[in-house]
Amino acid sequence: MKKLFGVFALVSIISLAKAQGLQSFLPSGKYIGTAVNDNFFNNPSANGADYETIVKKDFNVLVAENAFKMGSILANKPADPLNLKLSDLNLSYVDKLISFTQSNNIRLRGHNFVWYAFPPSWLTTEAANWSEAQLYSFTKQYITLLAGHCKGKVAEWDVVNEAINDNSTPALRSADTWYAKATSPQAFIDSCFYYAHAADPSADLFYNDYSIETSYSNKQSSMLTVIQGMVDRGVPINGVGLQCHFESGVNTGDWVYTEVGKVMDKLGVMGLKCNVTELDLRICGSASSITEQADEYKHFVNILLTKSNCNSLLLWGFTDKSSWIPGFFSGCGEALIYDNNYQPKPAYTAMKEALQASNSVKITNANSIAAVVYPNPSTGNFMLSSSADILKISVFNVQGKEISVVENVKEGFGENFSQGIYLLKIVDVYGNERYEKIEKR
Ligand code: G3I
Image (tube, rainbow, N blue to C red; front, side, top):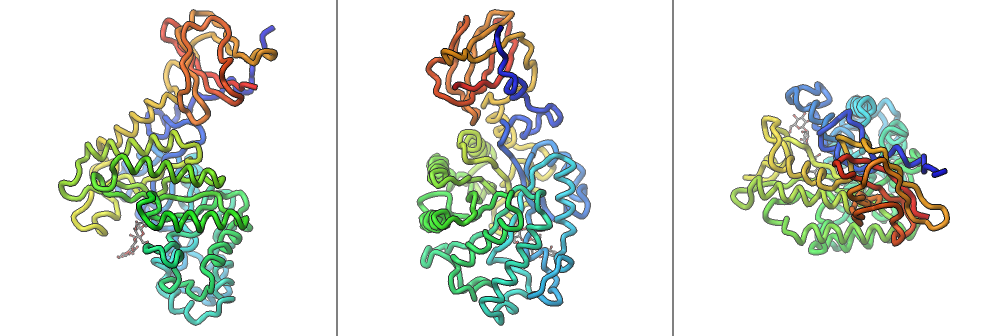
């Protein structure tokens, strides 16, 4: 009697609930997301009714553009900053986003605990009068309270944001930060990760920065040295976030994708994840077009799909109606995938096509064949039993990459595959399809 490999038999069919949005085409374990702006929290429809609809349809991970920052949460000076209480933290937007993501089965990313820039307006003056021990005490209390409040609800945190100097010497910022009293900025950063880990051991902890995406920036080698040191010391860090704020058509040549892939591999060797955390591709003058931009967005989707240590691709907003770009880069805009009227741009279509082309999910007509594939316990081959003639079987690895196509399968196949788990797409001569997962032992 042929034995079903039952535990794997029901996987690989993605829920139809949010059918046709970007996230519905993702393989399991991969996330596409967006930052949500502050208006969203007061009234999700304040941006236009379509904002919330699009968020729910397209994305399975969210991050707040500003609401989780210390500059927002401690905007009002606490009565005693060195004796922080949970009630000193303004968590109204934090709680709204937690509730929204939980109700809609969306992953939540926290950005961020510690950032040298945009601190609460009172903090820099106050911290200048603290001892180093008081600085550490304040930081520990803040991270412990916030991470503890969000425990089990925020899946990953940017623990420290943009701590590396732009000009690379010294590697870490110090004098221009509110934490300048830390005699060793590295020891201070390490401590932030320890505090976050102690408060929520299950959250993934990230270091996040810009200009670390390519080796053409001096910052990248500083980052790799800093992060390798943290790994070697056993600091609880799980990954690095590449912000990826790029100018379309200028710093988005093919070399960028190769470079991003390389740094992901380098971090992978350290045992770390590497996510794209703030992607936007601004258009400035005639340097690019929304068609060229579309191709660039597609490349980032392919990075997400093919790099095993890249789980998430987050955009820094999704609609040109609400983006930091025009206010920050004069003469630039149109950086995102929906236009000012919430209409999808070519970039959106390109992302969707890249996801569909990955063949790693199936939405329609799935499992309409009575076919079974099971491992032969003695040979390790995959055995096929089917009610109809099989045209071909495509074999995918767990990253969703197609590694082989087997045609005219009569019975056994797969003898050359190494041990591991594979996804099979079985197509019969009538075009019906079936998906199965199987383990080669
Ligand atoms: O909410 C106040 C509002 O009450 C006030 O009237 C208005 C007047 O300027 O300011 C509003 O706050 C602004 C806030 O965005 C919300 O719109 C701040 O001034 C402004 O500084 C803040 O800018 C944010 C910036 O980070 C600083 O926190 C941008 O929206 C946000 O996109 C940007 O995000 C950063 C990431 O965190 C880190 N990586 C780079 C990225 C882009 O700069």
